[in-house]
Amino acid sequence: MKISVLLFANIKEYAGTNMLSLDIQDTCTVQDLKDAIAREIPETKNLIQTTIVSINHEFAFPEDIIPPDAEIAVFPPVSGGQKKPNIIKLTDKDFQIDKLIPQIVGPTNGAICMFSGVVREFNSIDNNAGSLEHVTNLIYEAYEPMATNKMCQVASEIRSKWPNIFGIAIIQRIGELEPSQKTIMIACTGAHRNSGVFEAARYGIDRLKEIVPIWKKELDKSNSAWIQGTYIPNKNDN
Image 1 (cartoon, rainbow, N blue to C red):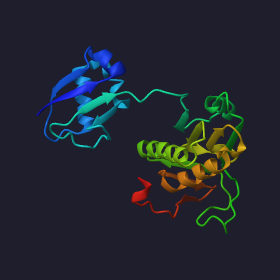
Image 2 (tube, rainbow, N blue to C red):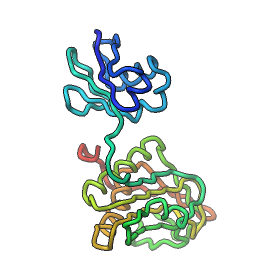
Image 3 (cartoon, rainbow, N blue to C red):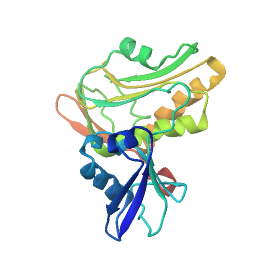
């Protein structure tokens, strides 16, 4: 079928027109539409995936099917206000907290709440079922594409629950680590201590342990053990 797509802002400038006509399949999704626009206007290839699509004046999502005779628009995220920074990262390298914090602090921020985990050398067996008593190394493994998406989801949930949070950083190490090395950091910034920074940081680490597909393997001189959680995600976790 043939459709017309309304274009706005920088997408319009790249196209040189405010309306683009395309021939698409009847089962074309929003993601298929974005790919088609990138082929039609190669200059938008790196831009199009972050644009927003609306169908009949409602936000549309990658898996949505483009219906016939719909009014379709493509535009960048809406401008306005100071951008609130998110830093989301899986890394096999050490991270420097002092270098990360300035990236999530704004000029009106006076509070930072941070949780940082480190590798324990000795476990309390009563509190860590399946854990080794003496740990010489930890190996963190992640289903990386999904883990990154779910870390982004955790940040979005924090912002939904605590709208006064300004900056969020969620950094997770993967690979082999030794005792006392940092494993994770979750930091939230806000105007003051009552802006939700304490609650948001605590929520962030707890939520990460529930829905982000990351596992750890403990090793000592002669044994190893995978540490498995107990939380089973449900539809509300998507």
